[in-house]
Image (cartoon, rainbow, N blue to C red; front, side):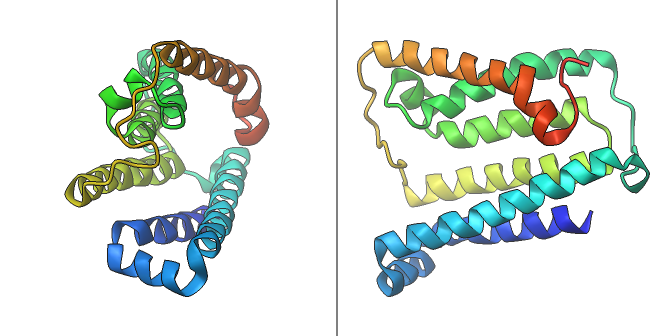
Length: 193
């Protein structure tokens, strides 16, 4: 549990930096835009690696991860389509599209849906900590983004309608790869079980 919690602290600590314009601007001035982005990326990846490693270990050793409740089967059936929406939202974060404009901040929407889907489908302590903290941070970040007026790297641009088809196709492909391959490989649990 300690490895995952340490990862969450590292990951969220670096992600709080952009929510404070003065702190972020000071770091950009000190390290330059490229240096700031590099440090941000490295620290984020370290945090993410610790989160995945810690969560994976807890799934392999259930005795260290108490079950707080046993979610009904129907919650897992709700989680699957929610995850499809999450992956489409994730794709929209990187491609100018009408979906991107409609969601306003698709990355945060993707994180909120991802976290909610996993909270519905899991009743163990590690899941509550992991997905609950991501959901709480995404809500905090959305409020912060709205207050700052930050439009994100793509701004308000919607792009041509073909981009919406591309967003959906990429989201569906990503969903399929995760459901049928990556989830079990990385986390040790098949979502199809």
